[in-house]
Image 1 (cartoon, helix red, strand yellow):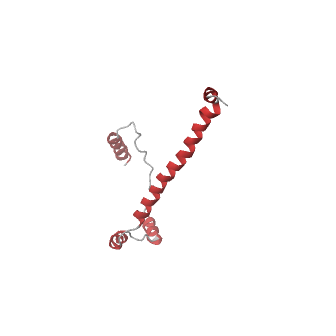
Image 2 (spheres, helix red, strand yellow):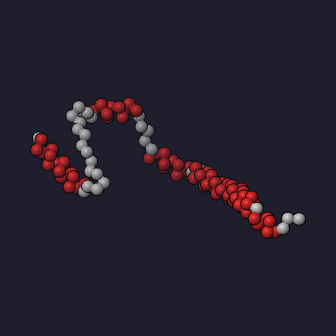
Image 3 (cartoon, one colour):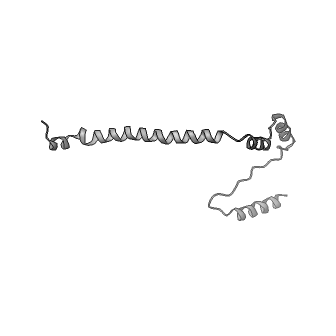
Length: 106
């Protein structure tokens, strides 16, 4: 019969079996957590009818033609690309510099 010391020296038993147990056990554990997630999503989707009516009133239907008309009214010919401040620059100082340059051009 195989002795206990021989089993402890076997790399498959020493490292492989715990790894397999961890993978299989982790899979069952993750299944429980994902089930909780999906249950919570189902609960969130079920809204009270009165609450749902309030939410739907706030949503306004966006009509593509109306948005297109708004864009047609905007003058894009005189548009200028203005560089924004870098993360290390102070935005207020940079805005003042931009305004000063624009005033000099005008």
